[in-house]
Length: 417
Image (cartoon, rainbow, N blue to C red; front, side, top):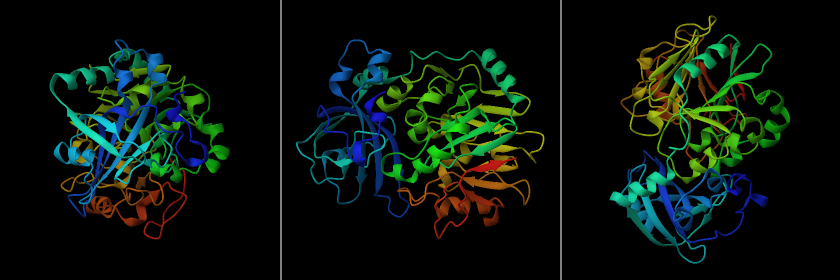
């Protein structure tokens, strides 16, 4: 296992990085509505010397020297990387970065583990990678060596699973996302993401409770599939650490998206990873409908799932991942649902987007988020998106066991049946 997916001793960094020269990709930008000039950027990074190899194998990626840079940009941040991000604030942009000596007092933090709090780092240099150089770097990160699933094979696998599915469960994994469709005996057969809280939100994942109460039924053998909605790490991190043994051999179906070194290293851990077939805009079985979204961002270009068993009212249960409601494919935004798992952990997708409406007063609006997470999810703006669509506060359920005064309906794992 790559050391990046291990917990650091005592919750601190594993050790100082082996090289100060990094190539990093902007993976996510988290904006703050209160101030347009403030945002947090997360960059997946790998040591420059690693990418200088002529050929990089799967085994190489399994042990790649990777880290995440978290950059908290505000009006007071003037380090080279913050300044570069202000100029080129776009998901997918690559940078040549040189870390300065010592820990520094900056707005930049380096995570040597997906589950540490990060340490402040001084930045000596940060230069955007453009043009042909960017194409070369992007090509060394891509998933071109991962086999694409055959559409007929995938349809057959999903059809065989369909008849076994009875209940949906949304797991309490803190600030992350992990859901499954279960058999009568409570065994998961189709996972819809396998994530958990990471980085500064690692603390939102209650490992002691989860590990003692969950493994017997969250693993449930190696049968079935994992459908990854998109490549954000909080949607697969449980499978990278505690769940590696029971998820490593499962068949994974993931969208073909641009990724950073972090995702590339995780993909190398999986024995049976397949990419969603490019020939399929959607795949349907008796009760399942899986659609490929067509937006430009990672959130809006992943897989969206609807499950409509005979007992479900209206259009069934919607699992949008982090897809914005206005970017939902196939007219899904206008459906009326028995239950909706809120997009992006209850954050507002975009101000002009309206959430899908409920089918009835008994419909459930479910949020998978961690108590007191650093993003402030679920947000008041996200709440307004649902109430505008006719949902009431009484229909809200939040997976976190640790309730907060502003969000009292926090109940742990949520079953839909």
